Structures are given as structure tokens and as C-alpha cells.
Amino acid sequence: MSETSAHERAFEEKLDKLAEVAVRVGLGLQAGQELVMTASLDSVALARRITEHAYRAGASLVTTLYSDDEATLMRYHYGADAGFDHAAKWLYDGMGAAFKSGAARLAIAGANPSLLSNEDPEKVSRASRAVSQAYRPALELITRHEINWTIVACATPAWAKAMFPDESPEVAMAKLWDAIFATTRIDQDDPVSAWKAHDAALQKRAALLNEKRYAALKYSGPGTDFSLGLADGHWWLGGGTTAGNGYYCIPNMPTEEVFTTPHKLRADGTVTATKPLSHLGTMIEGIRVRFEEGRIVEAHATRGEEVLRKLIDTDDGARRLGEVALVPHSSPIAHSGMLFYNTLFDENAASHIALGQAYSSCVVDGDKLSPEQLAAKGANDSLIHVDWMIGSGELDIDGITASGQAEPLMRKGEWV
Image (spheres, rainbow, N blue to C red):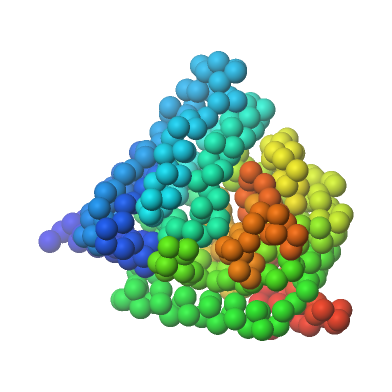
């Protein structure tokens, strides 16, 4: 067997293992379930492997919705202006109906980080708002963890080029695939066992934080002096979760975070991003914002500031926080030294916060509470949910008890 053939065979084996782990560990797909999957045309190979393993696991039907970057750009180049306030509501209604009838959800990430960087920010914002409004009923079933769902990644040429601009396309793709396999534990001898052990460690960390019952977190680092209160009855999660349908899933692969719901009225101070944010095909860099009583009152960015401003103007909740997550600076993704330009990975390289919609699962008995009851506990409501990274090897975090006492929680980005 030639060296090339051996390499190709090894790659195919890892790709197949990634698909199997996504279905059986990440998604926790059950026999008889439908699966709704989204992917780009560049992700066909992985989507087909996932489809095979879904049927092997007993799926009753797999439906894949493909997106095409070139078709997306055609809309911006040739579409009528009025059309940017329109979204395929019928499609998202159909997805919501599928979830309500018991379907699982899997998304394959790998978008071009700069696809829309040269397009009109106003049109990008309008199109995003239209999709958010149309998708909201279906998305709420995901944010409330009513169904089992997961996100996995597929290397794509545009993404690989963004990460490794000085390499040939072939080398760039190979490096990106190696990074995906490493951070999702596919390159280990027994990925399933490795994921179970990792999940257990994250669950243990979340349990310790739930025992502490901190009232707030205090952040100190370069460009960051920030206090963040936690929602009344908040609940820390990490790794996998049992969805409302009773099925256990690990929503993000990779995942290195423990996270909970902050109080939407209790954020004060200045926060500076430590990594760029790729949002809707546009790079936003050097984010620096100031909060008062939970709301962003100043927002700046060294690149993409107009997109950032339109993002936080999406609705009333877009200037407030819906998630806070803690990630050690020594996480495998941070340790790789790579900037992925993809939130699925970069958020698991650093502690982060998210603008917008809160997860009701991060409030005690949140799945049983009405929107009004969740709001009374401090959970935010919005059309968006956008994570951005604020952690680094220079960030200190204290847990603030109900009596106001500060306890060291992280120092220089590491758990105390």
C-alpha cells in the first residue's frame, strides 16, 4: 500500500469515527427518531457519513438541508432590496414542527468566516433579523433543551484558507482536519470512552459551582474590569444534558465550558474581547463594551464596528447577556495556539459571555417556568444568541458570595 493510500485510509477512518461519535455520543440519537440536519455543500462527505450512522442507529428518517455560499452571495449581488426583510418562514415552521414531533437536530459547522465581509452591513443585519424572527419558535425548543441536538464541525476550503492563509489548499485542509479530530477526541484510541470521561469531568466542575451558589462573578484583566450578577436560581451546566424528551446529548463537540445564566440587570463595567468574532460572515475584532445595570451603553470594535452596533440593536435584549461560560486557558483548543475563526471552537478556548437569549435549562426548573417567570429571575430574552470570548492567560475571576465575600475562582485563566 502506498503512503498516500495509507494516509487516505486513515483519514476516512477518522471521518467515519467523527460521524459515529456525533450520532451516538453528541446527539444521542434514539431508534425511531427523525433527524433534521443542516450542512453546507462543502460538508457533503461528512453529512453522508452522519446519515449512514443515523440510519444504523435506527433513525426513521434523515432530512438534510444544504446551504450554498455562492447562492448566498447572489442574493446580495442581485436580490431586490425589499427581499432582505424576508425569510423562509415556512421552512423554519417545518423545522419547528419536526422538533415538536420528536425529531433530533444536528448542525454541521464550517462556514466561511468572511463570506459577507464585503457586503452591505445594513442588508446583512436585516437578513439576519428576518431569519431570527422566523426561526425563533423552532430555536426556543433548542434553547430550552426540549430536544436532543448537537453541533459538529467539518473542514471546508474557505475556512481552512482563513486559518492557514500561507499554506496550499491541500495542506490547509489537512491541518484543519487534524485540529478538528484532535479537539473532538477522534484521534484517541477510544473516542467514546474519552468523551464519557471528559463529560464526567465537566459535570463535576458544574456540580462544584452549583454547591457554591455564587451571587456574582468579578472579572479582572487587561481591558476588563467587570462585575456580573447571576440569575436568581441559576444552574451551572457542563458537557451533556438530558433533554426534555428524556434523551441525553452533548450539544457542542468540542466542548470545554461550564456555563449558566447571568442576571440581565446585573452587569456593570468594561469588557474587552480576547479573540475576534466571526458573525454572519463578517469578522469583528477588538470588541470593547461598557455595561451599566446589565445593558451595553458603549460599544467599540477596531474592525466590524458597524456590524457590532447593528447586532446589539437587533432588539431590546440584544444589549444584555444571556450566558456566561468559564473555560480554562489550558483547554486543548487554547493549547493548540490556533485561532479558528469559528465560535464553536474559539468559545471553547476561552471564557466567554453571550449577548441575547438565555438558556432556560440554566435556571432551576426552568423548563417548567413561563417566559414571564424566567424574566422575573433575570433570564434575558432576545432574537439573538452570540458568544464572544473574553478569557485569556491574564484573566482573574472571583466568585462573589451572597454576603459579598470574594473567593478566588480562576487565576491567570486557570481554575484555582
